[in-house]
Length: 263
Ligand SMILES: Nc1ncnc2c1ncn2[C@@H]1O[C@H](COP(=O)(O)OP(=O)(O)OP(=O)(O)O)[C@@H](O)[C@H]1O
Ligand SMILES: [Mg+2]
Image 1: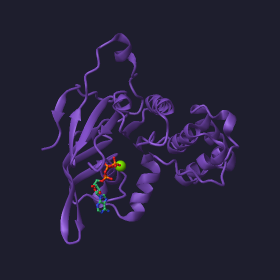
Image 2: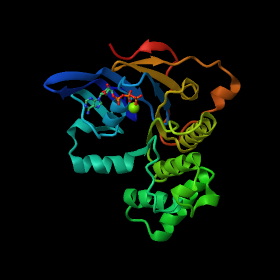
Image 3: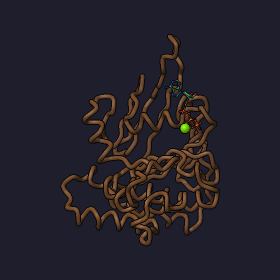
């Protein structure tokens, strides 16, 4: 296991019992993500991408192998500890936004912050929620309810909600699936910029290879097996200076190569 990874999944199997027969959804999946590293996972429908994200979020348990996130072995944790782990470690961005329709943008973000950090005063919650919304360009939409926001704006609220407590890891499952291509690209750029600014690691699931190519590394899921398929970027001065040394921990950038991570 590599020391200091935000994600260290080793030889993970995920098998469901369907009508008395085993259904192998993930087979010997290994994935190591450094703090502040941005990775994308692509792959056909039904290949197991969401299943892997569920295991990384501790929402499902691996059948075999080890899932360590932020130094915690998720297989050892009970539901209470998993809930606490999720509050402090993860921000999750969903395809279908999942905003609370009756709450303003500010209160949607504020509520997530109150849950993650119950000790904050109302004024602190409002201030931090407003700052998170400003960071995604929505300072002019604080009082709008989701129904009064465009799809891209709703997803930016989703992003503000996922990042307001400054978690070390963002998990995003097709966050652009309900957006047109241009709006989707804006949201992903924003997500990656925000993550790079805050030294947040990201696992982005997407069907769009152009969006995946913006990540530091790309993996492809095929029938439950994960392979690294990063296409090396041309080395330019701006690419090498794009990522400043993160304050949280140094993000060891792996050499970009096409190499299998599972057998
Ligand atoms: N609870 C379940 N019971 C039976 N099969 C399941 C269950 N959950 C997932 N599967 C199956 O596991 C496989 C992987 O599903 P998963 O949702 O992880 O795929 P995906 O790669 O995210 O697909 P998509 O791109 O369509 O979202 C699919 O064949 C799916 O039908
Ligand atoms: Mg899926």
